[in-house]
Each structure stands twice: as structure tokens, then as C-alpha cells.
Length: 152
Image (tube, rainbow, N blue to C red; front, side, top):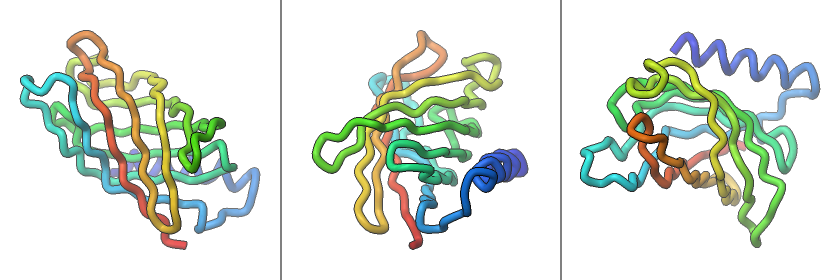
């Protein structure tokens, strides 16, 4: 948890250097739900945790969090959403960042990832949907759903 607070602190410190913090741009989530492609492998679909997302601009957001991953291990992440395309009220793009905590991937250490995402936001609620590609037998592919809440 100390690492997550440190990562968020660094992210928010970087934001403060560019603009005044606006609480209405901050989203909070309780982890993910992952619908895995490999249903026969007894992977954990519910991935509870805590995460934060801060909108810098309508196309850019920063994110960080911690959750229990599909292998029942603790993972942390930090990244940037870039979603320049629109399909009605849905934003489309990618999240690029780094993850850790997957025992079969890079000995549980940090690794980079770029993941296609779609986001729907309305009022206090939002939903991020990510297409997580499989990586051989190290990471399992899934469609991941992240419900988020804004306290504005």
C-alpha cells in the first residue's frame, strides 16, 4: 500500500506542476472484473482492489492502483489513458503503463503494457473496458471491466 500511495503522490505532484488539482476530475475504483478467455484454467475473475484515475484533459488521464490479480497475487499499476476517438458517448483508445505482481511474468516484477480501452462516463459513474491480450502462458487474456465513481 505504501508503494501505491507513493506512486499516486508522484503522479499528483506532476499534475500539480501543470495545473491546480480539481477533485471533480478524480475517479475511484474498487478493482476489476476480468472475463478470461481461458475459462478452464480456474483463474480469479473478481480482482478487488483500489485505484484512482485523474482526467488531465478530455483525451488524457493518469491512473494508478493495486488489486488481487487473476493468479491470486497482489499487483500494482501506473499508467496513462489516451482516448482520442469517440463512438457516440464512448471514448476509445489505449492505456499505456506498467504492472507488477504476476508470478509467471517477469518473476513478478514490473513490465510495460499497452492495452486497448473503451470508456463510458455519465455523471458520477463510469466504466472502463479493456481488452487484455494473452502473453503465452505468463499472462492470461481477458475482457476486463472497471466500474469507477466520481465524488464531484
